Image (tube, one colour):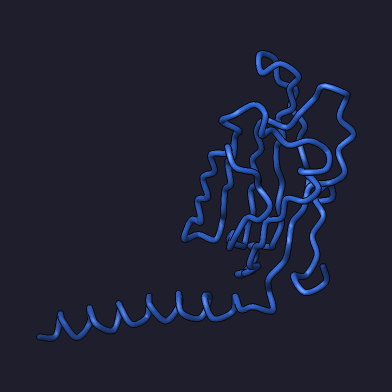
Length: 148
C-alpha cells in the first residue's frame, strides 16, 4: 500500500511538471514563421525543406500547395522537426508560393532551453541536382501571430 502511495505521488509530480510547462505555452506565445524572400533563377524551384524549432511546437502549416508530403514531429521535449518534400514537380514552390507559406508555432522556453529555429531548403532546376541553402534563425521571418 505504501508503494502505491509513493508511486502515486511520483506520478502526480511528473504530471504537474508537464502541466506547468504546457500551461506556460498559451496562445500569447504563438508565432508565425515565414521563409525569407528567395531570389530563384528562372527555372529554379524549392523541392524540399526542413524547419527545426527548439523550445516550441508546430501548430499548423498554411498555404502549402497540394502535392507535398509533410511530416511534423512535435517531440515531447519541445523540439519540433518539419520535413516536407514535393511529390509532383509542378507543385514545387516558386518565389511567390514560398513567401506565402506560414508555420504557426507555439513558443515554450523551459530553463536554459531558448526558443530558436533553423532550416534547410533544397532548390532544383531538374530534380536531379539539388542546391542546399541553410537557414539560420535570422534568415526566417518570425512575427507574433496577431501581427500579420
